Image 1 (cartoon, one colour):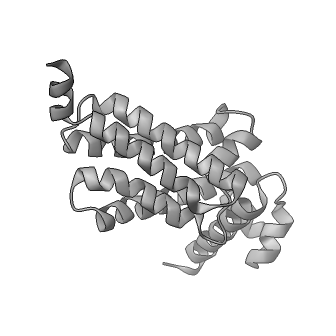
Image 2: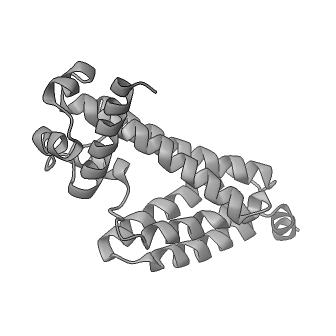
Length: 197
């Protein structure tokens, strides 16, 4: 990596940390430049303005978070069904981190009044990817109605994230996991066959 690319990456990484910690509107360009040590001229060489830097930070967060998420599920579960429940164990560890500030994509949608525009598109895409990962696992586990189950589990995920932020605790992953366990149990093909006989 050349020096120019390294400066750009460092700028985006610094912006990501500050946006997540302090919010998008509360974090000014001058603060990001001071923290990163990057000159304003360098910023405008790569980005038209703050919104473009926000987009780059969100793209980086998406890659980092999805990589972490998939890695945690692989590490924690040997089967697709175990990985579905491991979703909530991974969330619990995330909630317990000192720098947990909720979901950056929910925060972005909130600060920018919904899902209009490019910032909203990235936020919505991230949530679709999480849900699609859950559906993939439900499919691989051979569970009934995997799309509907993924919708239900995704709601538990998002609810747990919001409650963990609002009440500053990792415990919200536990009741979400228990609810998920019940949903997964009811989606077992044998459970459905028994219910219809």
